[in-house]
Image 1 (cartoon, one colour):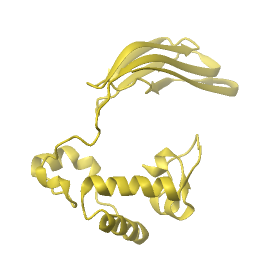
Image 2 (cartoon, helix red, strand yellow; image 1 turned 90 degrees about the vertical axis):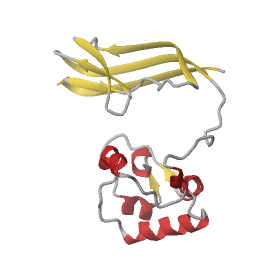
Image 3 (tube, one colour; image 1 turned 135 degrees about the vertical axis):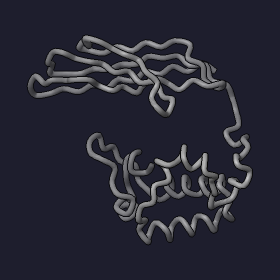
Length: 184
């Protein structure tokens, strides 16, 4: 299947501002199920320099550098992708025991996953909700993740919030609404 994507970001400012370097993450991630057939980006005003890099997590990023001021910034992406059907649940857990929660990682895995395994104080209401969803999934990793997704979909309202950091998990849980970064 061929799909077309058009994405436009537009910022306007009340006065001339220094745009500085802008990190742009709009490239679709290619894999064996997604091939980029056509891709065109346009950045206005024209940047002085655009560099394309792969970040630490394998995402394509563009860094647009502006040496002049502007009262607007527009970034457009037009793409055609060839998508192949696939079963997202057709995978093997590594290590095999990871199909059941909690996961246990060996020393090499903990080293790589270290930034994601930071120990923070988790609010009691989140522990209670997690335990409830875990019991509904019989401790199975994929079933638990589906329970989390279904719970957010059925119990929460999505809100567009273009500015600001992610809300704390307890706040999002209490408000029963949030943006993408809050749900993550």
